[in-house]
Length: 213
Image: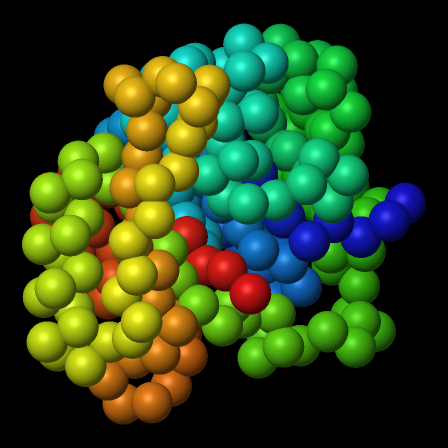
Protein backbone atom coordinates (compact mmCIF):
# COMPACT_ATOMS: atom_id res chain seq x y z
CA UNK A 1 0.00 0.00 0.00
CA UNK A 2 1.06 3.59 -0.64
CA UNK A 3 2.01 5.52 2.47
CA UNK A 4 -0.57 8.29 3.07
CA UNK A 5 0.51 11.84 3.84
CA UNK A 6 -2.70 12.63 5.76
CA UNK A 7 -4.23 10.48 8.50
CA UNK A 8 -7.80 11.28 9.57
CA UNK A 9 -8.70 9.78 12.95
CA UNK A 10 -11.82 9.35 15.04
CA UNK A 11 -10.96 7.35 18.15
CA UNK A 12 -13.34 8.15 21.00
CA UNK A 13 -11.99 5.28 23.06
CA UNK A 14 -8.29 5.98 22.51
CA UNK A 15 -6.20 4.36 25.25
CA UNK A 16 -2.51 4.64 26.05
CA UNK A 17 -1.47 2.18 23.35
CA UNK A 18 -3.55 3.95 20.71
CA UNK A 19 -2.05 7.31 21.68
CA UNK A 20 1.44 5.85 21.31
CA UNK A 21 0.53 4.61 17.83
CA UNK A 22 -0.79 8.04 16.86
CA UNK A 23 2.45 9.66 18.04
CA UNK A 24 4.46 7.21 15.95
CA UNK A 25 2.31 7.80 12.86
CA UNK A 26 2.61 11.56 13.30
CA UNK A 27 6.36 11.30 12.69
CA UNK A 28 5.56 10.08 9.19
CA UNK A 29 2.45 11.99 8.13
CA UNK A 30 0.07 14.78 9.05
CA UNK A 31 -2.52 13.64 11.62
CA UNK A 32 -5.96 15.23 12.05
CA UNK A 33 -8.79 14.25 14.38
CA UNK A 34 -12.01 14.32 12.34
CA UNK A 35 -15.10 13.83 14.50
CA UNK A 36 -18.74 14.81 14.61
CA UNK A 37 -18.47 16.26 18.10
CA UNK A 38 -16.77 19.65 18.62
CA UNK A 39 -15.87 18.72 22.20
CA UNK A 40 -12.24 18.29 23.17
CA UNK A 41 -10.89 14.74 23.27
CA UNK A 42 -7.95 12.98 24.84
CA UNK A 43 -6.49 12.60 21.36
CA UNK A 44 -6.31 16.34 20.62
CA UNK A 45 -2.81 17.07 22.03
CA UNK A 46 -1.40 14.29 19.85
CA UNK A 47 -2.64 15.57 16.47
CA UNK A 48 -1.76 18.42 14.13
CA UNK A 49 -5.31 19.74 13.83
CA UNK A 50 -8.92 19.04 14.76
CA UNK A 51 -11.83 19.29 12.32
CA UNK A 52 -15.34 18.70 13.62
CA UNK A 53 -18.36 17.95 11.48
CA UNK A 54 -20.25 20.48 13.56
CA UNK A 55 -17.72 23.09 12.44
CA UNK A 56 -18.00 22.35 8.72
CA UNK A 57 -21.77 21.93 8.76
CA UNK A 58 -22.12 18.29 7.71
CA UNK A 59 -21.84 15.17 9.86
CA UNK A 60 -20.29 11.83 9.03
CA UNK A 61 -21.15 9.46 7.44
CA UNK A 62 -22.49 11.91 4.85
CA UNK A 63 -19.92 11.84 2.01
CA UNK A 64 -20.05 15.64 1.84
CA UNK A 65 -18.46 15.77 5.30
CA UNK A 66 -15.34 14.09 3.95
CA UNK A 67 -15.26 16.35 0.89
CA UNK A 68 -15.46 19.47 3.04
CA UNK A 69 -12.86 18.24 5.51
CA UNK A 70 -10.35 17.54 2.74
CA UNK A 71 -11.08 20.93 1.19
CA UNK A 72 -10.38 22.70 4.49
CA UNK A 73 -7.22 20.65 4.94
CA UNK A 74 -6.21 21.23 1.32
CA UNK A 75 -5.50 17.57 0.79
CA UNK A 76 -6.27 14.96 -1.86
CA UNK A 77 -8.38 11.83 -1.60
CA UNK A 78 -5.62 9.62 -2.97
CA UNK A 79 -3.10 10.53 -0.24
CA UNK A 80 -5.51 10.24 2.70
CA UNK A 81 -6.13 7.43 5.18
CA UNK A 82 -9.15 7.36 7.50
CA UNK A 83 -9.01 5.29 10.70
CA UNK A 84 -12.43 5.31 12.37
CA UNK A 85 -14.22 3.30 15.03
CA UNK A 86 -17.55 3.52 13.17
CA UNK A 87 -17.92 1.10 10.22
CA UNK A 88 -20.50 3.40 8.57
CA UNK A 89 -17.95 6.21 8.39
CA UNK A 90 -15.40 3.81 6.93
CA UNK A 91 -17.84 2.65 4.25
CA UNK A 92 -18.74 6.24 3.33
CA UNK A 93 -15.09 7.23 2.98
CA UNK A 94 -14.33 4.22 0.83
CA UNK A 95 -17.23 5.18 -1.41
CA UNK A 96 -15.34 8.40 -2.20
CA UNK A 97 -12.12 6.56 -2.95
CA UNK A 98 -10.51 7.32 0.43
CA UNK A 99 -8.42 4.52 1.90
CA UNK A 100 -10.21 3.70 5.16
CA UNK A 101 -9.80 1.20 7.98
CA UNK A 102 -12.22 0.17 10.71
CA UNK A 103 -10.23 0.37 13.96
CA UNK A 104 -12.37 -0.62 16.97
CA UNK A 105 -9.26 -1.64 18.94
CA UNK A 106 -5.66 -0.52 19.36
CA UNK A 107 -4.59 -3.76 17.70
CA UNK A 108 -6.68 -2.95 14.62
CA UNK A 109 -5.17 0.55 14.54
CA UNK A 110 -1.66 -0.89 14.75
CA UNK A 111 -2.35 -3.27 11.87
CA UNK A 112 -3.84 -0.50 9.71
CA UNK A 113 -0.95 1.89 10.28
CA UNK A 114 1.71 -0.78 9.91
CA UNK A 115 0.25 -2.05 6.63
CA UNK A 116 0.59 1.44 5.17
CA UNK A 117 4.14 2.07 6.33
CA UNK A 118 3.28 4.52 9.09
CA UNK A 119 4.93 2.42 11.79
CA UNK A 120 7.93 1.32 9.73
CA UNK A 121 11.00 1.83 11.90
CA UNK A 122 13.18 1.83 8.78
CA UNK A 123 11.38 4.84 7.37
CA UNK A 124 13.67 7.63 6.22
CA UNK A 125 11.03 10.26 6.96
CA UNK A 126 11.80 11.73 10.37
CA UNK A 127 9.72 14.08 12.50
CA UNK A 128 11.50 17.24 11.42
CA UNK A 129 10.92 16.48 7.74
CA UNK A 130 7.22 15.81 8.28
CA UNK A 131 6.50 19.06 10.11
CA UNK A 132 4.46 21.63 8.25
CA UNK A 133 6.14 24.86 7.12
CA UNK A 134 3.10 27.11 7.44
CA UNK A 135 -0.18 27.26 9.31
CA UNK A 136 -3.77 28.20 8.54
CA UNK A 137 -6.14 29.57 11.17
CA UNK A 138 -9.67 28.87 9.97
CA UNK A 139 -12.50 31.05 11.30
CA UNK A 140 -16.15 31.42 10.36
CA UNK A 141 -16.33 35.22 10.67
CA UNK A 142 -14.63 37.63 8.26
CA UNK A 143 -14.19 40.45 10.78
CA UNK A 144 -12.69 38.07 13.34
CA UNK A 145 -10.23 36.79 10.73
CA UNK A 146 -9.07 40.29 9.76
CA UNK A 147 -8.82 41.38 13.40
CA UNK A 148 -6.77 38.32 14.35
CA UNK A 149 -4.55 38.78 11.29
CA UNK A 150 -3.83 42.37 12.34
CA UNK A 151 -2.99 41.26 15.89
CA UNK A 152 -0.63 38.57 14.62
CA UNK A 153 1.05 40.94 12.17
CA UNK A 154 1.72 43.42 14.98
CA UNK A 155 3.29 40.59 16.95
CA UNK A 156 5.68 39.77 14.11
CA UNK A 157 3.93 36.92 12.29
CA UNK A 158 3.94 36.94 8.48
CA UNK A 159 2.35 37.22 5.99
CA UNK A 160 -0.99 37.21 7.90
CA UNK A 161 -2.92 37.08 4.63
CA UNK A 162 -6.69 36.53 4.87
CA UNK A 163 -8.40 34.34 2.28
CA UNK A 164 -11.98 33.32 1.75
CA UNK A 165 -12.42 29.56 1.56
CA UNK A 166 -15.69 28.21 0.20
CA UNK A 167 -16.68 24.83 1.59
CA UNK A 168 -19.69 24.43 -0.65
CA UNK A 169 -20.74 26.29 -3.81
CA UNK A 170 -19.09 29.56 -4.73
CA UNK A 171 -22.39 31.38 -4.25
CA UNK A 172 -23.17 29.93 -0.82
CA UNK A 173 -21.93 32.68 1.49
CA UNK A 174 -23.16 30.90 4.61
CA UNK A 175 -20.62 28.14 4.03
CA UNK A 176 -17.66 30.50 3.61
CA UNK A 177 -14.74 30.15 5.99
CA UNK A 178 -12.03 32.77 6.43
CA UNK A 179 -8.45 31.60 6.56
CA UNK A 180 -5.50 33.48 8.06
CA UNK A 181 -2.32 32.27 6.35
CA UNK A 182 0.91 32.26 8.36
CA UNK A 183 4.35 31.28 7.11
CA UNK A 184 6.83 32.73 9.58
CA UNK A 185 6.72 33.17 13.36
CA UNK A 186 8.13 36.25 15.14
CA UNK A 187 11.34 34.36 15.93
CA UNK A 188 11.91 33.56 12.25
CA UNK A 189 11.01 29.87 12.49
CA UNK A 190 8.27 28.26 10.36
CA UNK A 191 4.76 29.00 11.61
CA UNK A 192 4.01 25.28 11.37
CA UNK A 193 6.36 24.68 14.29
CA UNK A 194 4.03 26.68 16.56
CA UNK A 195 0.73 24.85 16.03
CA UNK A 196 0.08 24.42 19.75
CA UNK A 197 0.38 28.18 20.37
CA UNK A 198 -1.76 29.00 17.35
CA UNK A 199 -4.38 26.45 18.38
CA UNK A 200 -4.89 28.36 21.63
CA UNK A 201 -5.52 31.54 19.62
CA UNK A 202 -7.90 29.73 17.28
CA UNK A 203 -9.82 28.22 20.21
CA UNK A 204 -10.34 31.73 21.56
CA UNK A 205 -12.03 32.63 18.27
CA UNK A 206 -13.93 29.31 18.03
CA UNK A 207 -11.85 28.28 15.03
CA UNK A 208 -9.17 25.71 14.38
CA UNK A 209 -5.64 25.44 13.00
CA UNK A 210 -4.10 23.21 10.38
CA UNK A 211 -0.55 22.99 9.09
CA UNK A 212 0.42 23.40 5.45
CA UNK A 213 3.46 22.97 3.23
